[in-house]
Amino acid sequence: MQVICCVCHKTKTHNSWTKQAVRSGVQLSHGYCPQCHKQMMERVANFFAMNGCRKSA
Ligand SMILES: [Zn+2]
Image (cartoon, rainbow, N blue to C red):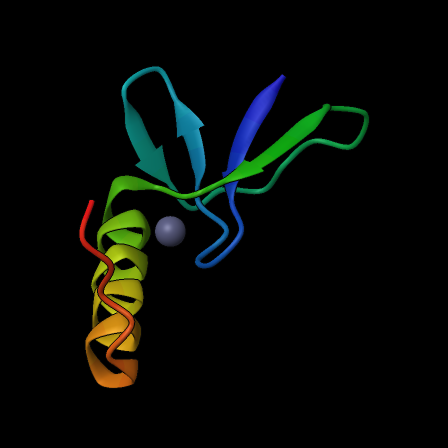
């Protein structure tokens, strides 16, 4: 099974993320590469900051 980033469509090969064609028949698991994961976390943090939904843990 191969992990593909659902944002930039890079696939994980060994320990690096590269943009490459995915062979048909390969099972894909959608996730986030470290770069897009970081962007997404920043976006989520901004969203909560803007909406004032910060709950005390
Ligand atoms: Zn990505």
